[in-house]
Length: 301
Image: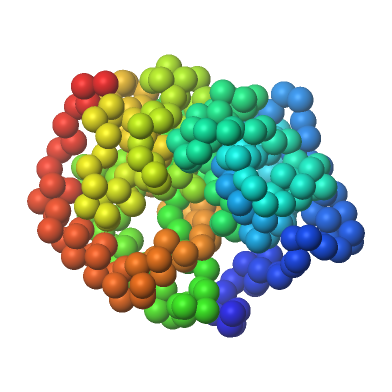
């Protein structure tokens, strides 16, 4: 991977490691930096679902270990029935974790919501990296009682099947559609790997709906031409919609660079090529432009 076009903080956490034989020095370093999250009465809970993430989990944990915050924060990983060394690595790093045997990210996020101790839930994913100011930036808007859900933007980590330059062009087009949707359909921009809300509000609207499909992401479902579930709640965007429709507050787009997550491009390259991914999502978005510009209907849930 060519790291020359990546921020220096991102490159720091893109190390390769053998999950079966990670050095004791690396484990000790990550464990020490994560010690700040071992608290009894946190204000914020960072909740992360993980399914067979042995190849990425240490990179994620390393980035979270560099979080700079004055607030009390816990880290909770939900092991979604992993069959690899994910749990072993979490234990070595001293990370609080719970086990959810029902497969599916919505089940994992719901278990995390119920087990979390913080007043605010900051949602992340195991294949992402987060800048040092992320937890502060993504949760800051929730100090405003009229805001129920805050979400950040994203950039993609390049893989052998893509390039950072091509990914940046894709992101510019995607963020353009994001701005259009944000006028009346901001919930459709919310990704599970980068959003936050108050735990009490989420519990009050019923939590995460587990009929949200394989991915549970509004944006991913729409991109694939699939309809969101009728319940009005989902693992990310439909949670935001439920919070909005049930009077908990609005959805807020955080443009602070510290709120930007860097995520794997594996869902993009799964389409066969970056061009195919771009065409599928961008033209699909253009066809829905009128829908994006019309007011959001109230959910019946």
